[in-house]
Image (cartoon, rainbow, N blue to C red):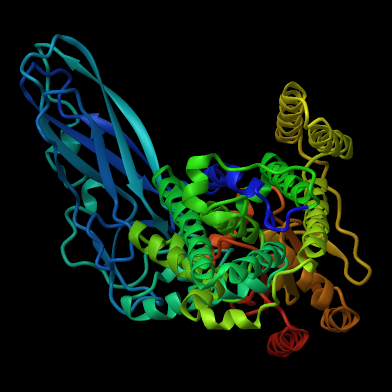
Length: 628
């Protein structure tokens, strides 16, 4: 075996597919609608060329408000009305109502908001050559809703109005357009001095969130450097997480080879890997921005909630394993080979693809500081999302950047040699272990029978790859084996994507009795004097499993929970669950693990991503003492 073929050439051929998966991660979670509106006109009919006045009559759910069209804080998303008008119409002008200024505990300056029922008026001219008949006018209201403690993901509402074009129109809806002071929807518009203080609450908020939640507070420009530092540290710590270790091991292998070819090859390979990491994080940022515009919010790792995506990744990992074992090689076309470097070595394209793969494998893991940074980013404008995600990408790529900046450190790497063949084959088994983990994730998403068929399809994929190697002397047989491998890969993904969800079963525990998460019950128990510990987890989250194995599911924690009468609840985010997504958003989180302790007479306590026994015991005992 030629040791120059040291890293999966298959990575080069799958780079584009990995990029698409990063651009459009499955499982976007829809934002929660807290406002609705209807569109009304000031006349029953209009002649061509005549001025039209429309009003969006907006109603916001009780205890909630939406941001002003011109919010005082830059991090808040403004409320905007958009109209789809026929070609030739005049540019519409919008008249937004006066906003109310409310003082909230999380912001030093008053926040400008709309609440209750109010109107947004739009005026425009119809085209002069418009034929008579019915004209549909579509409207979209874009907004972000908050209460006095938290904000939900930005979303939008749509409606449509049928305008009649013709003569004989009469004035209608005078109470809205002429400003009748007794009309409820005009009451806020005619308000004089803005009221200070939170909006009046009509019922008890049974889901309080901490006032320090990034999603609720946003973050002032003075704390942006802190968030950038957290993002950089979180990305760097990802390199030590089990999701990324297989890829990191492969990169060490590749850098050893590059070091053997000279300093320039080492620097170029490190920079190409960094470029792959950054491009993949920019793709994730773009996906977050597009999802926000579509009324959805993207969480860290939510694509792993889709069985089809998990199986696709299993296909990629299996192919990489087969490649590491020498069953096949995919040489680059000559044009790309000249770009990436001569010969069968990995080249810049392969290094770039490995950067994409590193990010893809990193998404099911969370790290300290990462959840805070991602939660902050997803509640910010588009440019801020790109800035924070770039910082995370730079953190993940920091080892390669340091190697490029200080190539002399390459002398610490072992010299290339025959050992690389054995190392390559060992890495194949490490990747195969990653495939086993992916099957474990699938076990929580689809039925055992369907998993068996998926595994048979992957076995067929390996068989066709082996046949392609054994029949390498025949071009026709090679093409037949390649088609068979592609068909088996496609079949495995199809079987998983079309599978019905697995039947939910309780999580077995040797120490704790878990019940499914129910926020209403948790709040009720806390009001009755009990502590409630909630573990938000997912089968695809390795950080979650490490915390459960090393901290939560231990005799010390079980004894502490029993002594303090703690009820344990589990929020399973393995598959899509909008209730859990919205709960996480209230705390500025978009990823698991996440841990909350509901406490009598106190605000819930949120823990960090990595638990320690001492911290968990300290908080539980202090909360039990304060509640007694």
